[in-house]
Image (cartoon, rainbow, N blue to C red):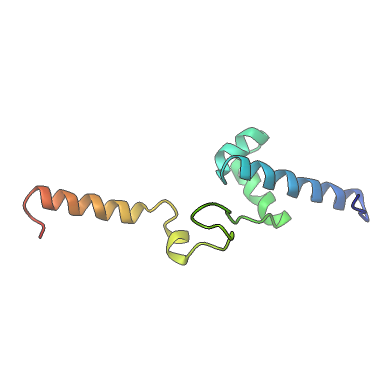
Length: 98
């Protein structure tokens, strides 16, 4: 069993592990995790930062849990890529594209 210097250290360690486990259970979805924990999203964000919770995914696309590329961090849901694909498809269907 881990030894802690204070109750605060023990509580912080527990919260960090608990939040990380819940984030994994909800596939890193902050909103769903906050809802289950019955706290505001902004409070969960503060806790993640304060407790230095690891926010790396370990999945098929990123098996090592390495940080995602800068492009995916700035556009995490591929919004701009999806918008471009829809726009190109629209132009082709209207006879404007090449």
